[in-house]
Image (cartoon, rainbow, N blue to C red; front, side, top):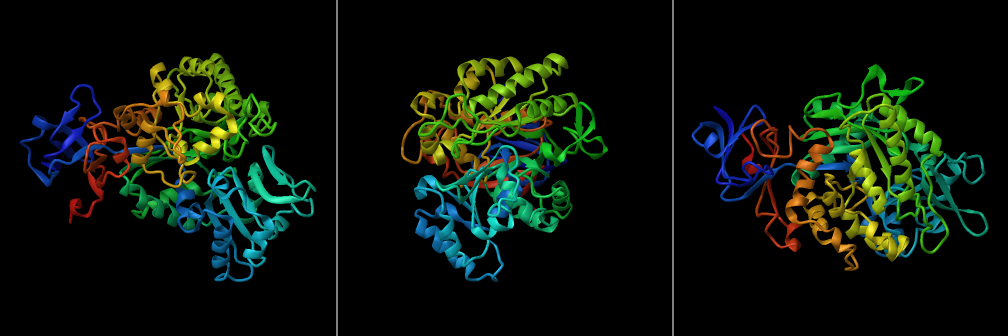
Amino acid sequence: MLDLLLRDVRALTMTGERPRANTVGVLHGRIVGVDDEVAGLAAHQVVDGDGAVLIPGFADAHNHMVWYGLSLAELDLSVCRTPEELYDTVAARAAGLPADGWVIGSGYDDFVLGGHPDRAALDSAGGGRPVWLKHRSAHMCVVSSAILAQAGVLDGSATVPKGGVIARDDDGAPTGLLAEQAQQLVDALVKPYPVEELVAAIERAARVYVTEGLTHVTEAGIGGGWIGHSPAEAAAYQLARQRGLLPLRVELMPASEVLHPVHEDAFGLDLGLRSGFGDDFLRIGPMKIFTDGALSSRTAAVTEPFCGHGGDGVLGDDPEVLRARMLAAHRGGWRIAAHAIGDRAIDLTLDVLEQAQRELPRPDVRHRIEHAAMVRPDQLERMVALGVVPVPQARFLYEIGDTMAEAIGEHRVPWLYRHKSFVDAGLRVPGSSDRPCVSAGAPLLGIRSMLERTTKAGAVLSPDESVDAEEALRAYTTHSAYAAHQENERGRIAAGAFADLVLLDDDPTTVPSSRIGDLEVLATFVAGRAVHGDRFKQE
């Protein structure tokens, strides 16, 4: 007897053999067949889809789940349209805090505000309290004088980590803006977060994710560096799962800073763990390595200076340090997830990956370039030769595309967050959000941006890089599974695959693109169990 039978559905199977189906059978958390293979079988639970569209569960190949969950308990600054509105928001929160209480907010956009928040204004709005406001890109933050003093910036005792920038005014005084690795100066004052706080953040994020049809996410950096929250961050995920608070599958990327050398040319986690360790619900993925910053903060490492000033960004560390780190990861059996946004950082990453494969070939390893935001045509050819998986975020085009285009200039916009060029070359592009670096990271919104490539101001950036709806859907299903070496486990509706499924009220491959983001997620199933959609949950 089946555990679950879904009938009267319009299933998009994402397989070539049988692209459409009307009935799907599930046993022990996996799909056992479709249509005539299961139609006559009895089941403990029968779900009538009433013609709704069934697709494989969405997967976000690059997100920050803990960070997003934490942000849900912080001030939401993405709604602020003027500096005054932001300062009023800070003042309102400060009024309810003790004299030493921290005011923490996330998601402010300097493009919308007309500039970064003013340190003196934050001192006033916060009543002298520590104020920590995180930029929407996560590559910058603005802090008040109280935090600068605690961090040793005001008296000059602070040591700025390599790859970090402390912004200063014309008189040399710190403005409160900290970029890239300089954010570790604040992190040192608040981290590590208690494990119970991280578990609560995971639960908050998970509740949102399943309502959007997400059944798998990759957590892009835990445990160390400015992106991690605690050396025990993986333990928080394990605890959340044990308590039944993790209703979807998660792949964890350890930050390179949390790994240690096991001998002179290899990195490892304690007990020799590396990529692939874990089970069907929680596993270790690639090693996350930062090679540069971001376009919106003009800290991405580019070969030609940004427009408006002569800066060409920053690398995450000395080039030879980054080279040694990536080579050691490759030799140690890790998949590499290199954060590389600017074309100079991508050059460095490809150079190292070529050297790594030359010295120790690892066929089909599927090293990744996270974001791959500015890819020149010559770099595209090298990526294909190396079998690299690019992991861009199409939703950035809508949310911060205007800022990015202004920073790099019209002549480089064709390189920006490519998609069709990757696909035409034979690369598989997974879908991802980089949430909370976007304020709205739902997969259906990402699919819409893959089709339209429209900014908030209405500009269309490199329309030739648009893909059709079916390819966009593959990005969030089969291609995301491929990026994790799990294409035989998930991302399709076929016998043997995980029964991770999403029921939608209409077909995202046939409705107008303007409607895709508004489609309703009727139900989300993980391992054949409804984790969203009350009427589909078993008693």
